[in-house]
Length: 328
Image (tube, rainbow, N blue to C red; front, side, top):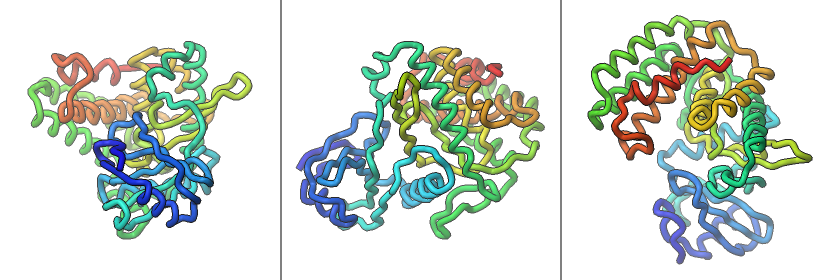
């Protein structure tokens, strides 16, 4: 028995072989922990038929079915590099929880600090451009309505409210939760959030074609390769938070991460994306709200689990520079 992560616990070769047998994937050779990722759900699994990733111990009953649903659609309707086939075993008799086996996608893990530190600034700009291109490809997956995955029907359930109301209600929920967790979310912060909403909310009414929204598109959830001097995204994974909505909302996470390091990376990412996908009128105003959504979500997460930025900052002090970005 080997302990691969806190979440997965101790697992044995016999368990891995039983999981491989479920999908006729050969004889177990070895397993290896994956240090990347926040939640410890994944490990490398190698058999006589190839190298795979085993993903286990779901957080909610719908997590793996949701990921399988979107992976299958992306594979069928886009050219995005996704981990397909996404083999889901809903039974818990082997590990005590359901699990997934999927191909191990080739490429550099940018979530590895040593890997990323070895890259030249020109490489990072090339990767940022590749990320813009791949996100545009992901957004080619459209749907008739905006909504969330529903486990009972195994399809997309439309939101109960208009999309603009859903976005604004989530922002307010994140702020409310953060305020209940620490004193770093002040009454002045709440007032600032409402000012940003009031100033920009009209732009949310501009119609859009609902499409796949990753929800956590960033370097840590992909791998890259260099082919004849050009960087390409060779795999995108982790659709745990995916939904169907406004594609512009998916620009916020990557833009925020890049802007916190180097604005040129954010510009390179956005420039390529917008060459392939047209932004609708009112983009700048929606960007402020979608960035506010992303930042209040991260702020709430940080108050709950521990911040990795200057702890004395208030919400407005931390988030306003991102919400006010003007890169296009």
